[in-house]
Amino acid sequence: MSKLAAQDKFLDLSDYGRSFGRFFANQLKNTRFTPIHVTLLFGLSGLIAIYCILNHSYLLAGFFILLKSGIDAADGELARLKQTPSYSGRYLDSVFDIILNFLFLMAICYVSTTTIGYTLLAFIGIQLQGTLYNYYYVILRNKSVGADATSKIFEYKTPKALPGESQQSVNILFGIYTVVYGSFDKIIHALDKQAYKVKSFPNWFMTLLSLYGLGFQLLIIAIMLPLGWIEWVAPFFIVYTLLIFALIGIRKLYIK
Image (cartoon, rainbow, N blue to C red; front, side, top):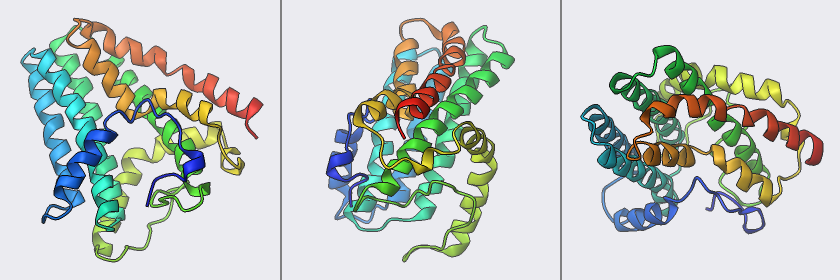
């Protein structure tokens, strides 16, 4: 099952790792590797990137950050190939993402002159950006005929486990997900309460929105590090967050 129906597909600037992810998943489809194993692997790639940042190996750090993005695309692809979608995998993926985002920024803070205050503001900004992207994207997925609807627009209730996964695992991971993402979800939902009523989002808008996708955020960091712009990473993402109001404004004015 595809994430989107054909008519709703758009140029996703944050999804550059999809081709690698699809290739990697195809190599694993007839093995014992599960999507959860792949999720753990992208977590490992992220940890290696953090180690490289701490050792000032910024080119290598950028490589492993981009590799993390590619592997991140593979767990969902493998789940679709094996027809084993799961809420456990969906929430574990998201929890790993937010932990790694925090650790990336903290590692940058440690090796640069960036203050902890700017680092925390940048982290909050990155999460709000990604939440806006996911909010609109999940709305589109849930309205797209025949698309993957594992993700829900409003994640306020523990879902029922899908075949092949434990309800206890879903309960635990959903609980963690709610703690780490709940406040960001509520802020974005409050800023655009009526978005879920939109019949569909035009492709041009979704492409513009993809500037806030996690993959694109990581691409920016992976480019800034080897260019020697490490001091500007946190300030950039703080300012970049202001685009949220422009995107929501465009949605409210032109997309009903």
